[in-house]
Picture 1: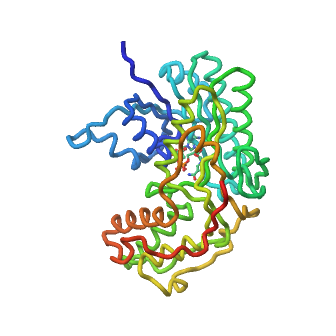
Picture 2 (picture 1 turned 180 degrees about the vertical axis):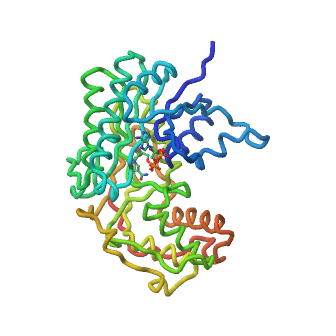
Picture 3 (picture 1 turned 45 degrees about the vertical axis):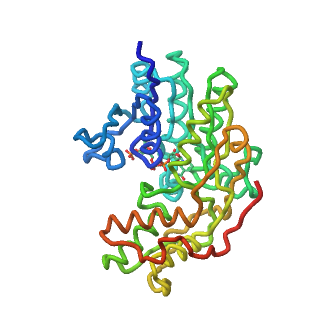
Length: 351
Ligand SMILES: NC(=O)c1ccc[n+]([C@@H]2O[C@H](COP(=O)([O-])OP(=O)(O)OC[C@H]3O[C@@H](n4cnc5c(N)ncnc54)[C@H](OP(=O)(O)O)[C@@H]3O)[C@@H](O)[C@H]2O)c1
């Protein structure tokens, strides 16, 4: 009998979905993913897994067309795949865009989660369920934010994620499902979407160095976020799913830095000191409501999941900037290779 565990990932084409697929394949899982039909293929982050020519022996992702808004398809897929673990990472995940598309964001994030939970319940398959909850659910609640901090979402995305969080908790408590919420603070990587602020900065700097771009256009530089490294965060998701009892966990670094600090450090690593000349502030990027300070207290994850982040702020910037420079066909100045750039006031909050 095949003892391989089967995982089903929604959002497999996204940053986290692709890292999670890598991680689970390494663990020996059979990995299934939900993909949306589009007129152009959108599989860049999975390319290394679907190549079959020689070097990469890790094959085994099986992709299924579907959509989180399509309940009947979700039911059919759950029945067909019969997964041991379901990771619900699919979302309209951009906070700024959620102000422009609140209804669609809620359809996918909140109702999509409910449809998936219902699909699992109605098939009766005893699968474990992971919900990609978010620090944006805290909004402007006092920092540091932990599992005990009351939510105060400040965007349609945050509101929809709170609903999905509560649906997940409700299916756990009401239907006895093994359903967990990973409350993840921001996590970034070279696979981060190009319209998220961190990636926008590193990619723009690489393009400035390559002579292809003159300006970075940004909004609020004062927002402070707790930024971790995505590959480490997907391991935390898996660890939650291996616990004896389902529960909710904050995953964070416990450090917070402003967008301005990210920008300064990235320019410094690129060897550019007069960086202000490359910056343009555009009020179109300001949000109707801002979240000012997010910093997570991941003490529970450290204790119960034995999970701790290793990559911190400086190293994260370096990883992303190096990758974008390589992509643009240039290399970073030598002085940045040892990560000796001084931190510019990052605040460490007790955990
Ligand atoms: N990254 C973070 O800092 C962070 C922090 C906390 C929580 N989260 C949450 O964690 C999850 C993964 O984040 P991420 O950074 O990997 O996001 P991402 O890169 O934006 O990926 C989102 C994924 O969701 C898919 N998707 C969007 N709408 C869908 C729909 N209607 N039906 C099915 N799939 C749909 C996308 O498919 P396409 O490729 O077709 O667009 C993509 O695969 C998201 O739920 C996000 O909200 C992220």
